Length: 292
Image (cartoon, rainbow, N blue to C red; front, side, top):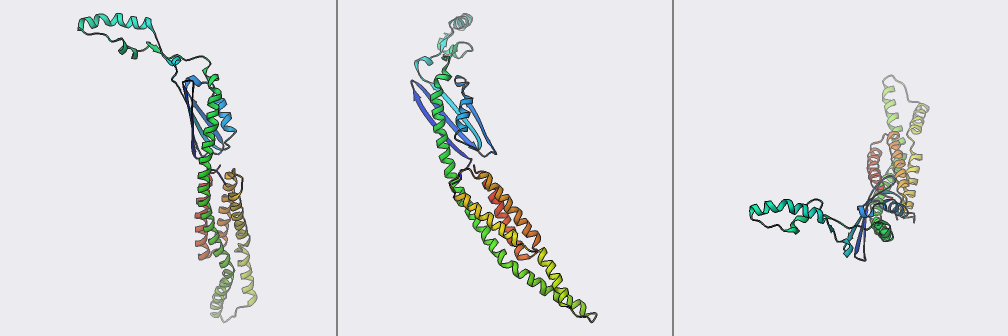
């Protein structure tokens, strides 16, 4: 079944007091575009993450967000004692004058007093765990894209059925169009020639009818459109899940055939059917552009 290019996947893990969270979102795109967003502690893993994603996803714009939480003892912040003493030295006279006391803990929010302890080389240490979560998030994303693709396939088949119904009407109507034209032409010629006392010659009528039949013949267009419908259904039911571009091309070809039918066959009934066909094809085109 085809896969949608829209989806979400996430994975989490905890190890040695460190928690990692990977969230992945994808939307439709002509090619694969991966954007990795990581914290400073994991800087340098962007390329590895993008390579991992490219092995599992072919099309779409994918945003990968990696979050890191260090809850171990090593994550405790260090206090800049010299800066603390400088702040206290400046604040002490002011506190004495106001009769207030200074709470050292309240000073920790001041600039330069605390700094997180980040171990060097943490990105390389965390790399296996992060890439494992990226794979798991990709798998979850793929499952969601498959479910959405299956739902879209049902909707696409509904539009195909509507097109087939209108195409059947066009196929049934086409033969009678020439016959009706021949009758109208004969009546018109008889009316005009009667005024001058002349008669309609059968060969004149046949010649005009032959020209009209050749100009309005839509047999090939109807056959090609029917063939596109068959191929479209086969691709939807195939094991190949990378059919988005092919289906988009087929939808364009179907629209081209419908336009040709409408321009060649100037019949009211066929014209209405062609409008309905083009509307259904437009809905197909809109939806297949979101398939991988």
